[in-house]
Amino acid sequence: MAQKKSADMSAADMTIEQQVYDDEPGLLSAFFAAFGEPVVYVTRTMKELNSLFFITLKYVIAGKRRPAEVIAQMHEIGNRSVVFIAVTLGFLGMILIYQAGFQAMKITGDLTLLGALFLQLLMREFGPTITALMIATRVGTGMAAEIGSMVVTDQVDAMKMCAAEPIEYLVVPRFIASTIMVVILTILAVLISYLVGSLTAYTAFDVNFRTYFDLSFISAFDVGIGLTKALAYGMTIPIIACHAGLNVFGGSEGVGRATTQSVVNASLAVVVIDFIISGLGYVLLALL
Amino acid sequence: MSFLEKFLKMVGTKFLDWSFEIGGMVLLAWEIFRNLLPPRMDGPETWRNFYRVGVKSFPIVVVTAMLTGAIMVIQSGMYIKQYGAYGLLGWGAGYSVLREVGPIMIGLMFSGRVGANNTAELGTMRVTDQVDALRALAIDPIRYLVMPRVLAMVVMLFLLVVIGDLTALIGGALTGEALLGVDSELFAWSIINYILLEDFTHGLIKALAFGYAIALISCHFGMRTSGGAVGVGRAVNASVVTSAIAIFVIDYFITYMAA
Image (cartoon, helix red, strand yellow):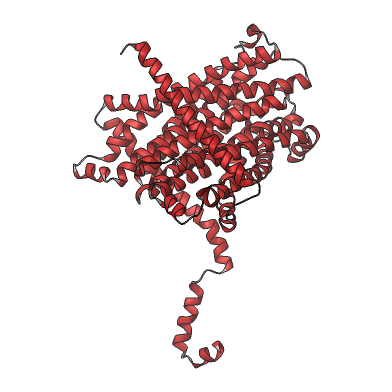
């Protein structure tokens, strides 16, 4: 019947029908769309994040200083995360000492290097990265939810009406506070993890404290790479979280979406930055 | 108020808060258990959740796992280059990824992607009275909303860790070849020779426990949301923070018991 119908149609109608048919995604175009969509999404988000980062940086250098606001954010990001960081990183220290200790017992039975190597690995990798992931979950969701709630209750628009730039008022204090506090929390996290690890090594494997607290392996390279990572994470997390918060639309559902997006993007950014800095650090170490 | 009084008050408040949340989670766990034997849940909703939780998280898990494997190879590569023991690279990266870093990183990503999403969704339903509407229609919210999500998260995190372990090892092999010049055949040989099946199953047990913990915590905080858009944000924050703590604590106890 369809064939008969199309035979009745004029040539012009045929082409229109053909065009309509072509617009429907076939299997092939759906396949390419599945690959293209994330690419488009990532490029657009990267572009927006980049511009937000540079605008923020401009205000940090040239904008008005508001120390009270920065200190309030430092309290929110730093002091209120201490217990959370202490619990998670303390458990991480115990876990890693257990795993490393049992493996070392099985293979060589020599545990004298346990503390020294643990501290080195903690400084290079686990200290900064796990701390940043924890900050990304706790502070990232907090920032996105807070700014997102402001957006859906039109407070950000009210700010714009008063000729106040939301980026300068909301993003800049969080950016400065997070950059400082993530570095400090990382140092604290490494210390806590190392100390808890020493207790675990003593109780589970009878490693003497004097043997454990061996700093001979640590070089400026280890400290440097750890602090570089912490600094990079501290700058990235607030930018991603504030970007997610500022782009909220659509009530409580939108706030929920933004917080999820903030955690996922911030955690992914931490892993990617970790990979890049570790790779560069390896190349640097090979050259030295 | 003196400093001591303030301190005691803070400790007491925190203690009561935590007791309230833990009690709520235990009650929810009991409800889930009661609905599990025999299984009473909504069929189509369960399939939808399998897709939403599992298939939609696939790309992010693959990317995370691949980078994690690469990072572990770089980190162990620094030592291996020092001693020239290139045959141990696959073992060093594989052991840490399969037992520890893989499940933790994938669990944390899963908690961020699925757990937070779940809390936000249930919280939004809660603040817009949709959960009460279900109850008014004589539909049990536990059976219709909670059970499918719990089942989907436990099953899917398990499967995602299996896939994630594989991609992490592939990422490690590629990095080893590109950066350290270690042949991927040697890498694979090292894994096959030194890694035990026990290392792999150790990670999978962790994945099951993490999946259940994330599901329970995110559903609990979602179903307890109150107070509009601000409340949803607060619930998501509490959910991901508790999930992260739960992941590390559970990981420690599983490691301790397996050793």
